[in-house]
Image 1 (cartoon, one colour):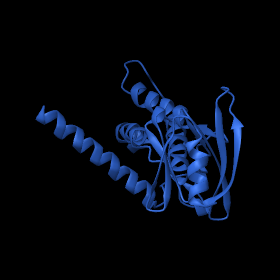
Image 2 (cartoon, one colour):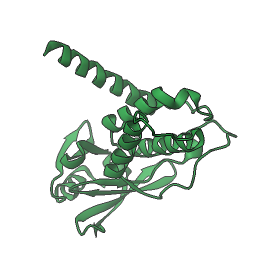
Image 3 (cartoon, helix red, strand yellow):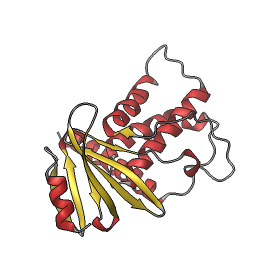
Image 4 (cartoon, one colour):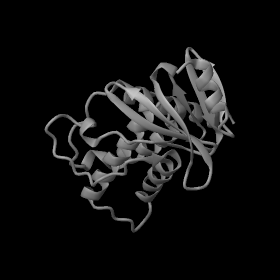
Length: 203
């Protein structure tokens, strides 16, 4: 797909603010405060759809290596495929993860990751280590899936990192694989926190 065609397809999704940056077509979705960043050469297909809420959207097939990943963009949300848990950890690991969804909406990911981060500090909330480990790993699969389709979920990742910093050290999770994209996301979280602290101190 060429740049102009992709630009016009995304522009037809009401609410998306579309631009071109360094060869990527960037569609910002205000409702989630994030943007999809797509290389037109990686877009294998695009179909107009109506999502269960009744909203219009576009379903894309995105090439990632030998895979074709589904990606749905609407005016209010972005829906994508979570990464496989086996790709998050080193080979041979035993995974404490229940079956995850085939697709997850960005808004659902944000809601669930934030809810867990808030819950762990609530008095009387007692999450057993097995459940917490499985949930943190599944949430990381959500975040990695978002990264694969060009999203940058910094605010969501900040909640994940908060929970991990509070509880992750005591969990029996296998070691995560090296992942430069994840490292960049964590660096963005650290920078966002640094800016917030600086602004608070200046006010």
